[in-house]
Structures are given as C-alpha cells and as structure tokens.
Image 1: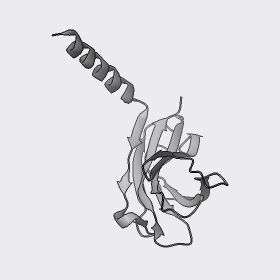
Image 2 (image 1 turned 135 degrees about the horizontal axis):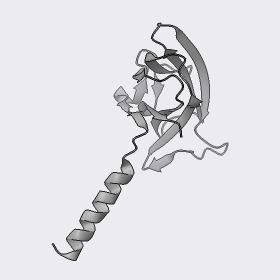
Image 3 (image 1 turned 90 degrees about the vertical axis):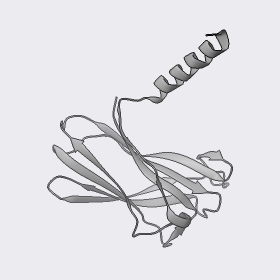
Image 4 (image 1 turned 180 degrees about the vertical axis):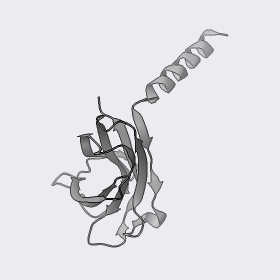
Length: 156
C-alpha cells in the first residue's frame, strides 16, 4: 500500500473513532413535513433507565431555515415515566441575537442547534421513560422548521 493510501486509511480511522461517543444513547433528527411543525407532530424518544442514580444530559437537536421569523422558540416537554406520570415543562430557547444574527451553525440557509434542555438530569425511577417535545408557539403550524430531534447522553 502506498503512502497516500495509508495516510487516507489512517485519517478515516481517526475520524471514525472521534465520531463514536459511547456515552450517547440517543441522537436523532426527524424531518418536519413541508417545514411546517404542527402541534400534532411532537418528537418522541424513549430511554430505558437501569440505574436511576446516573445523570444524563438531554438536548434538543433543532434545524430551521432562514425563513424562520422569530429570534426564539418555546418548546413544551413531557417526561413520562414507567408509572405513566407526565411531568410537563415549558422552556424558551434563544436562536438569534438582538440584531437578528442567528446563533446556530449555518450552512447555506439552514441553521443547526443543539439546545440543552436538562443537564445532569436524573430520572426518578428505573424503567422506560419517554420524552416528548412539541412546539409551543402561537403559530400553528410553525413555519421554517426543517428538523427536530433529541440527544441523550450520560453526563460526565
């Protein structure tokens, strides 16, 4: 194998190893049909908790287009435990500076965010927990939303 092929193989191996994060349990994006996120299409993820003393970081993966007309977004979260008890919380996330500059990473007219919902969060009990995220803005549907998802990882 010549030097260039060895170097390319080495670089690909390093990139593959860096992209692996064994602490990540869920990392998802769901496409929003026609870039119109309705109240009726929440994003859901389930996680099996074997040890309720472990802490987790929970993020919202979020992408919007340059056509999104707000500097923030209000989201409504449901954390549903194995006992089916639904704990509901509403939270605001800033997406732009006061001058209108987007805070997300941009690629063309698409902006990506990883918004922290809970840091060092401990689920109250063992068993399967479901997290539901729905948009909670006045507009329905909310236009300019491309993808929404969840990332859950063990806290370090």
